[in-house]
Amino acid sequence: IGTFVGHKGAVWSCRMDPSGSLAATASGDFSVHVWDAITGKDLFQLPHKHIVKTCDFSPNSKYLATGGHEGILRIYDLTQPEQAPITIPQDPSKKITITKCNWLSDDLLIVGCGDGKIRFWQPLAQGGPATVPVHTMSTEGTSEIRDMEVSRTTAGQ
Image 1 (cartoon, rainbow, N blue to C red):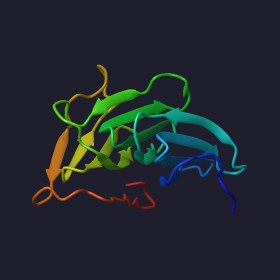
Image 2: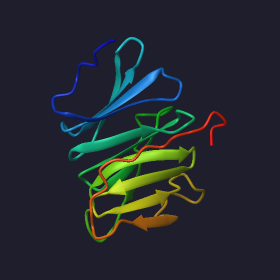
Image 3: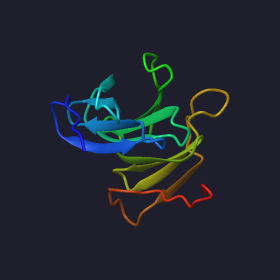
Image 4: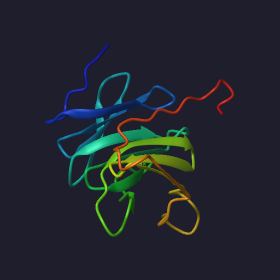
């Protein structure tokens, strides 16, 4: 068991990539750190403009999705972390806090939000970043989505 040292605020989310070689942490210090999960070395930092509540690696470990109080889903290409991420506001007309994001596949992401909705995004669809979710589910009322998990069978489904 090791320690990741580097954040200056509360860590809201910690995820391992499927290979177990990378870890990512989302924090109240307005950043996400990507770590070497074996050595604990801080590989790079991804700055945000507000608290980051969630992060998740794509199944192929190529992408990292992040979200938080800004209401912007960010998709980072980890093969080129210095490049600007794909940015997708959850609703262009108002700010909606992103509370959780989970990749379902290498091209489909579910995003839980403070407005009680779960949005399904295909952020890497050809033709540029997505501007409309492919599907939206709502809770009764406007209860905030606080947590979600994805389980995969041994067949990867």
